[in-house]
Image (cartoon, rainbow, N blue to C red; front, side, top):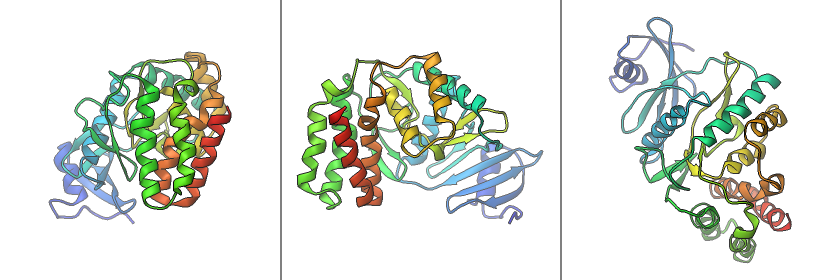
Length: 292
């Protein structure tokens, strides 16, 4: 139900008014931490509340960094404070093959905008950031295989083992993948500018016929990681997205075989957050990576 804005000066409507400098006509709670706010004149914004320490700072910096590439559409950031973020609301549309191919080309351009190093945070973003509800450290590194093992795979493997979600004997399989990463990783590539949490739920299909990205865990990384994440939980017209991407920026030979390698990180994150079912998927991905 849409209601008039609350008088609370820390409420979503008051926050939106303060950060946009415009009067608020109405507000509508979307979920526990998201409120849609209608501004005077008809513009819609979303007020996002909460997250772990530094989460708002990391998300705002990530959105701005992605926007600076001038490639994929992202919501404009109107303002932020310690625990609230006000961003543009994306007018909803529907995916189709043409929009998917455009998204692939735009994503290639985003990746090509680059990053100073693997693990580099967005300018102004914190080193201690987040991927969804899990903490994620952005520690720069020069070589992707070593950085991926030390700062993406192994921290979550250790947490899963400590929690008993992955058994110690099973962890050796993932550790073997990490040891063999230099030979499994494919040709060396420069750091790409990643969204970092590119599952289907963070891709919005806008009324303008283009894909928009939300909720980034942005950092410098390997471009195949974003593509593997798109495949992990499904994406409409994925093959058209990939075709558009490869037309703009061909991928190195063997990239399809490396998909499980790049999915290992998000699967371990989900293992830490959601339990054993994802742990079994992570172990399957590790086996597939070794067999590729």
